Image (cartoon, rainbow, N blue to C red):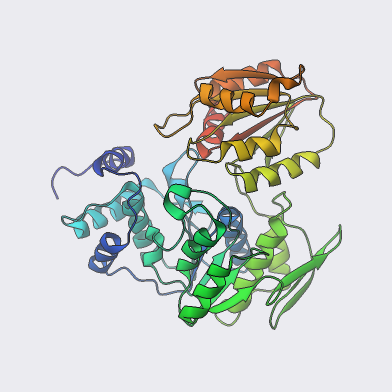
Length: 429
């Protein structure tokens, strides 16, 4: 095909500018290109959706299955620094060359069908993984479930982690509406695992209507434990004396229990031993989820961008021990419940460094400042708010101001955390 890009950055630039909408809900266009690609998997597929906890759940599955000696493919998103982070084989990011080959295949199969950036790249990464010699594939859903491009694939096991209010423009403004969208990844006759302890009735009803094999937390699987270890109990499998996941945070046992339920479903095709579970949980590496960086002042990176995640971040900050002052580098998309995020964290932060982000739908620093003022942050004379054009500038100022016994919490949009990761990476080189 003439005039196709030759490098990965050129491909990504083309895809970013080609389709008129960033998000264009519906599966017909994606399904038609998938059929022309003859895209299918020849190994078990695990699909993971949810408001929060998707990335952690995928990382746990990947780590445990790799410890058990399986060849594992993973599609996750968004990325922080390099697009290649979205596609991993056996824990390694795929190469530019592999991605370019897959992009070219999708471009040829696309013919005249218009695809968004997300739809095109999802098809390309699924195509790449389908052609690799793998024992299992893990696919992370982007937005919602029912109409997400990933959902053109039929999963053997579907996992919904948590359900909370987010992306209301696309998914609805209640947990019931959002629960129905998440349940769209369930399939008749196949395992449908829900790790949310209070699942919306809409999710349960949809699973029952289509005849999915619904696994509910507290009914079909659960966990128990003390400060040293925890135990998993499923329908026919128990796992005792497990170590806690290396990922910090209050919700990680809910995610880990859903992971072990998925592995229980697949125990014939993909048997996994107790020691492999223990080692896998101990060795997870997931950037930007309550990630505490080495050195002083303490720096915490967390992609908490909705109230549910902010509540978890607040709890995790409480568990860190004493810090004299806490600085926040905070940037957010405008369509998020920014007030809800602030309400969970305003009592934990002394100095707010709010920042704009390089996307049209991001909140400006001045808009974030106004939200903080409306929330009464400056009613405390010890607290301050400063505005910045970029996360890098905000972080540099926070590092300049913070003492070695202070901490800096970088949170909000992925772009906020990615900006600071970039700044830290360039400081090392």
